[in-house]
Image (cartoon, rainbow, N blue to C red):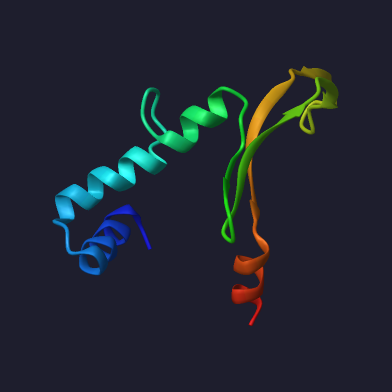
Length: 97
């Protein structure tokens, strides 16, 4: 399922226009700067928990030294922050059935 299909199913389920539902999906899940409620919260270092569904958050990976596999040269890999999703108990149980 892609974003357009998600908006169409949401429109059918709640009785709103598909255009309005597409806006709602963009407001919640948008990843561009300045959009998306979830992404904005993750930018500030906060977690977003949706009970029964799961938790979105960020983790920090420390800087480390790696090896270029082609040249065997040592390279420095900088520290970075990355997003993660941890599914909730209800979602895990539903999918595993």
